[in-house]
Image (tube, rainbow, N blue to C red; front, side, top):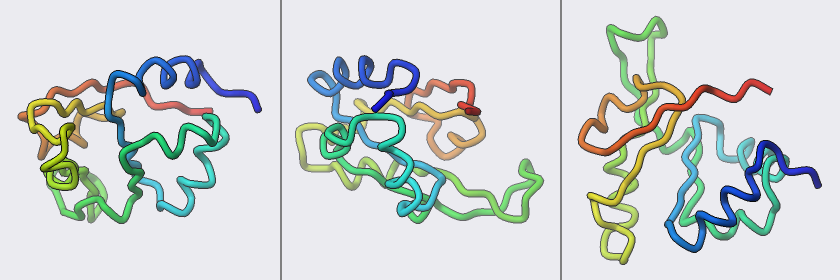
Length: 118
C-alpha cells in the first residue's frame, strides 16, 4: 500500500509521544473506508478514538452561508478522555483546516492547515 504525504512517517513518530484522535466531518462509516487509503490499517487501532460527523454539534451561524453549520466542540474530547492520563484539558491541540471550525474552542491551541484536495 502506498501511504500518502508522509503520513506513515508522521504517525510512527507521533504515536509514542502523543495520544491522538481523529474527528472528521465525514460520516464515520465513510471515514473508516477512506482512512486505510492514507495510512496503514495497523495505525487505526492506535488512535484513542475515531469520530465522524455524528459527533459534531449542529448550529446555525451568521458567519456561515449554510443554514446549519457543524462544529467540533472539544469539550466532547475532553469529557471522553477525562479521568485518563491523557485527559487533561491543557493538553489538547486542535488541528483543522478552517479557523471557523474552532469557534467554540478558543481556549485550546490550534493549528489550521490547508485542506488536502487530492
